[in-house]
Length: 512
Image 1 (cartoon, rainbow, N blue to C red):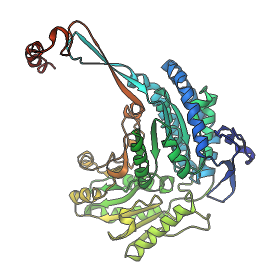
Image 2 (tube, helix red, strand yellow; image 1 turned 120 degrees about the vertical axis):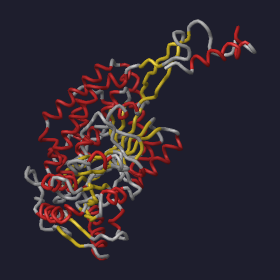
Image 3 (spheres, helix red, strand yellow; image 1 turned 180 degrees about the vertical axis):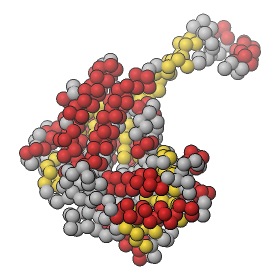
Image 4 (tube, rainbow, N blue to C red; image 1 turned 60 degrees about the vertical axis):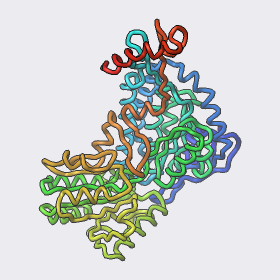
């Protein structure tokens, strides 16, 4: 382990990173003012080797623990997260620049995800009797065995919850985990790993490597038994190809160009407020954020005017004030993308109803929450994920046109429908892994018992629910045969086998 110099408050965290030798370090800086938050080792594939080797050595003993003891660790961890709220919000804000209320939302998700799987893991993982080959004579049981070592590559936009909420079910299923947090936000992940160890998790059961994804990502894929990735669709394609080469499983939550549909019978005030949150929470830097709004004629004028007014009034700024609604973008690259998308759309005829410019008076990486209309289809912003505080409004003739345009995309992660009477009907017609009615994204995301993930190029597999834990297991069938044999051998060899099986097949095919 390597300890590196860092500002005093976070100086203890880099010691949790696995390194095979002394390493150069990388600065972690605040996007709001450029100040130094900390330093972490610049890891190499050798460090991945060591972390995976330690995790592999620790995995049999961890899996052999009774599930109840693993659950107890997760419950203590959730308690510690709640007890260390202020510290965790501080480090999350310092690294990501998000508002404090957005940081609190993801801290809450860490706790609720841990609580959900602590409560349900035994049910999801229990052995299940299955119908056997021959009733009474065949006892068939499905078991779930851990994959082994799970690799998790986490993004910067939710550095608390996406660092550990995928690790929780993997750990409960008996796997060990090696985590690579994003280089922009490693200290948030390390703060949670420290609490896991305080909760009683053995050191090598959850290892951490830090450094550039282009070097550590492929090294991790080459060594682990399963990979969980959250990030862009472009990188997800590369990850999936590399996993396929090794014939290991992977799950990936990727990009989205998420639509909302506002129908004539929507509650105007609730819709305006809800979509302001859905578009601009976390500064628009979330995969399920709404980036397109389709509005039908009966409510269009009122909605557009009220929504633009609400967005223009959003409170933007740095710091721990709970009243701040929108924080900073995370990096110069994100600011450049947002600026380029908006400028391109305006140059091609789009109109700005709110925002549309950087806010350097607040800090280098702030951008005003932006509402556009009349965005032409050839604008980059029309079809490409922006991942920032920008939304485009489109007027449509009716619900049918809204559905058709909402589905006219390769993405399929999240969608939203606003209506007093027709929400469920319209939601069922949308091609998206999650659809929220009279909500933007939080209702589906926070339904931890239901699967969450994308269709199309928005991802592979699911997190949350039963799928979110069983994906970290191998299904094993154990069939115990009593009495007669099923196979064509012994006394049932040769012509006797079809003589016996013909009437048996006729009976068995009609059994429930």
